[in-house]
Image (cartoon, rainbow, N blue to C red; front, side):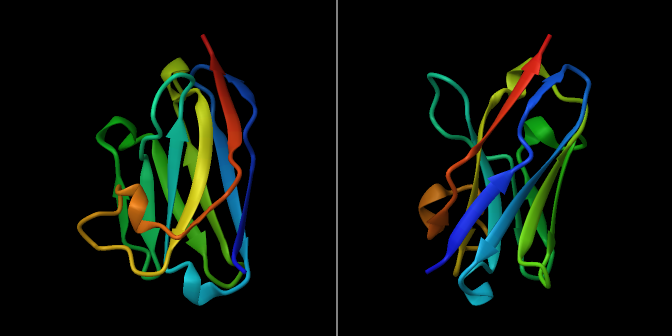
Length: 125
């Protein structure tokens, strides 16, 4: 069974940086595409970034140039480097993994098969 465990979320001041990690276990073939979805208080879960097995990436417009997604296939881990953080980035960040995520739809939550429990990112002004 595939498990995803996020870490790295914490309280940071606006303008600061954080690096989130998503460690996977249970089968690398099940995690061909990995992505990060934040959910802010009182809002639906959104999308910030995705990366496939070949390291092709996709980003939400709101984070382009500030966030970088990467992965270490040997370590079965994905990362989200978050720079120039803003208070509006405050959310629980969920890691997701999918076996066959459509190339044109990395932002679609239903494309993903596995989800982590989330890690809290709080950005103070």
